[in-house]
Length: 314
Image 1 (tube, rainbow, N blue to C red):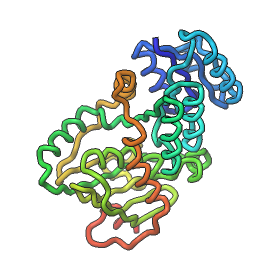
Image 2 (image 1 turned 90 degrees about the horizontal axis):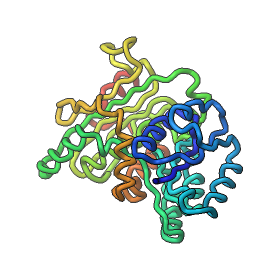
Image 3 (image 1 turned 135 degrees about the vertical axis):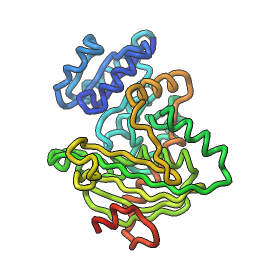
Image 4 (image 1 turned 90 degrees about the vertical axis):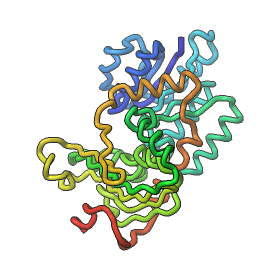
């Protein structure tokens, strides 16, 4: 049986990891979070050890490492706030486990270099959750695009997920901890676009605010207009008041429908990782480098066509 430990078990995304650990027939040996609202463990792994102090969690995993093989941790699932990912991945490698980390893998590209050095030094691996790469509708779209490699595509990405006032007071509203909107809610969409249409050739930011960012990109096989927003005023009138989130991707004017199919994507990622087909540092690197650039890029005036919501609110 494969044994897991988990950081950030009180967080929003942790239940998907708990379900994936259970669904793959694995076991959770220990979990940690500074908050103790972790009754979710009763539903999945009531016998798991739990620590609110990270140092005690660290010590427990080290004791397990020195014990019998059947009690050792093989993977550490990292679901903690973004700025802690790098440190928690290092813990996993240090105790002889692989890391399976939520997006974004790290906030700064130079951290990826250091983690690659640790992989080589310690012999364990760092994996990440790029769940859109296993979404059936997007896998089918990629196969279609690969058959049309000589064609250049026009893409528009809109992702509006309205959040309450709490957001700006939590770690997610702190750019130093979350990486800002482009990183915190956008990195997996940017990874998807690069996976579908090739590497970034040029990028520009036309609007950059605390709760919305948008611009354009030239990828190897596509021109992209994009907008990411936490502001409910950016919701289309057709859905405003009916739903808090709007997700739209059009390719050559046609909507890509992938609203459904999200329920088991984390389980798919776990299955692939356990089978030796997980997504590693090099898979995550292009999107990490891109969002880091966007975070530090000065705004430029829109040149030619850009996202209509940018025009509407500028």
